[in-house]
Every structure is written in C-alpha cells, then in structure tokens.
Image 1 (cartoon, rainbow, N blue to C red):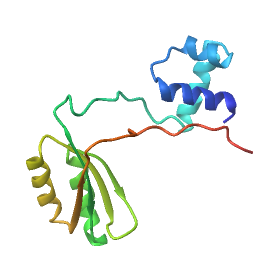
Image 2: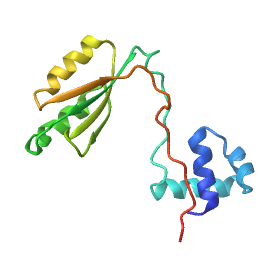
Image 3: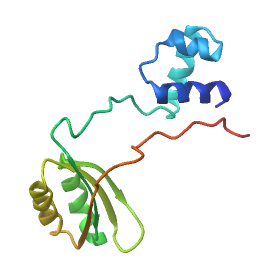
Length: 148
C-alpha cells in the first residue's frame, strides 16, 4: 500500500459514497486507475465492506449499554451461536481481565435490557454500564502508508 492507496482509503472512510471522479481529482489519477486501486484494496482485505450509519435513538433504541460477562471456556461453544442471534447486540468481544466478554447492546428500554441481562446470566456473572452520552462515536482507523 502506498500513499495514494492510503489517501483513497481515508477519503472512502470519510464518505464511502464519494464518486470515483471526485476521488480521482484528490489523488491526481484517472477514474479507471482509482477504480482498479479500490478493487485491489477490496481483494487484499483493506476494505471489508461499505455500510450506512444509522441513528439508533431515532430507530427506537435509545438505551446503549456495555455488559461485561464472565463466560467459562467450556461454555463458549454454546455462547457464541446464542450471542450472534441477539439483534440488540451490536458488538461482542472476547477480552482479557476479570470478565471474558465485552458486549455492546442497544435497547428499547431498561426493561428490555434487564431481560437480556437475565438471559446472559445463564452463562455467568455480569456487570453492566448504561451510557449517558457519547463524546466520540465509533470511527474507522486512519490509513497510513505502509513502511517498507
């Protein structure tokens, strides 16, 4: 990856719907050359997809919570298929520390959150934090030219 690839990635990070022509103007290449670079970046795994960013509160999910869960290793075979099916879960990470899972979820109400925590406790001990506000939303990393 060179500095032009990094610039293309950063432009797409800011606006994934940016027209090829506009990207080409920023990197001083033709639209077909930019298209070929984007295709290569997708093939090599630098670009893993394109998404629309939705507003959870406007869609009826005003409660955001982070839930720590202590799952025993023998339970992971049962836990992973379960957690993948829960539509409220937007991210689940296996982490180090006192708890083995860090779950981010969006909920219609605290009642719905409480019911979910009750289900999770089948797998182990939980600790929950409800988010009051978010000063920095989830953002993509900035691409830097690979050193070599």
